[in-house]
Length: 398
Image (tube, rainbow, N blue to C red; front, side, top):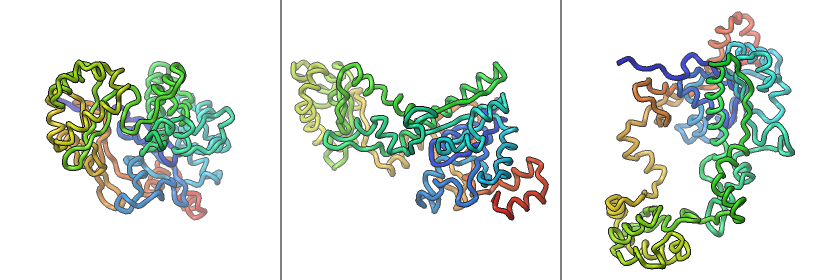
């Protein structure tokens, strides 16, 4: 049986990008077979390259978001550098940028300007708060947008709000940019026209706030912060086990509660006890509900608790560490790990979660060094060697 090609083979993406939101979006496109040309500053490149050195000497954010791309180092403050980008865009299908609000427009690299010049181009502007409104020019970093979108207000314990441990605002914007590009490519296939796509981090994360937002707007009160618990479901939390581990479980309906009471807690009478028989009652008596569950699990190891909960058909999980995830048996059994080439040698990375059975594997290309592909891309543009030498001498490219 022949292997189907990757969905975006033949699509070229040019990206003036930095940090996480745009790079993660374009990495998704690269994973589906698109060619992604990443434009970086000659003096250090994407500033995410300098966040840390945890990935074998490279920055963990950069390794995560930039595999499979070609790095072209160009000074956008020099008109000759801008000309290089415009020449690349002329042959591209998609352009993505997440410069500070207004910066791309000043350079003539905003989606509206580029799409007007190239009607088949799909141009994507990613910003913190959008092109208009009182926050348009406000600096927007992930933690700040998490606060503005209300995510921090509903995350944490009753005593203390906390931000998410991953860059949720960046990821939300990246995934809407990714899906927006796919939809625009589909529209172009039927109409022949591209067009601008606008994504804001605030609007992306505000959409992800759907449950607490609707709960608060229509119910009159935002859900309380409950740590690992759930504001409107009980039992739904992490419970200590005999050897010091923790097991999480979630009872979604009253039938499940009766199974839990009989098969795990060993107290079938609680299935019909008015204090516990309905979810409303269990939430009203949350402390008692949690105490009953905790008492039963405290005498079991985590493995024993998981086995018993699985046998009873109760949703459950271990409270894993990052190291546990890296060694997760399910990821190993499904062959989700690959090695990605980098300047410091191969590094493990997960296959992207979109799988096409019978299709080609994601390319999982190398993480580029700064300016690694500048010369090759300029030659592709037909630039004479003498002009390349001049641009490099003047620091316009690197």
